[in-house]
Length: 120
Image (cartoon, rainbow, N blue to C red):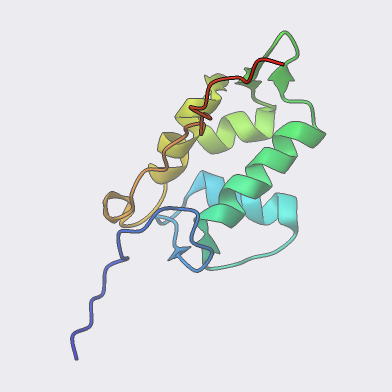
């Protein structure tokens, strides 16, 4: 039986992939404070969902351009960014994780229906 110490390369959607933060991670401190928990590991889905909910509930986005996140002072300290585009979130989170190079970057894409519209 072969075992490995590194995290398997799987898409982030898999609920069971646990990740750990680098020592003194400001993002981990932010998440612990916002969730009132002190967890040693999170799943990628949990991290992204928590951040999404915080951004949504605290209205930390430009209402004219919702894909631009305007950081609160706490989030700015956690990510070392005043503002960012939502497509940058994965990289900002991954930069504070251990073994992030072993994880596959999520692909954001839409499924388009290639069928032609039916004339009525």
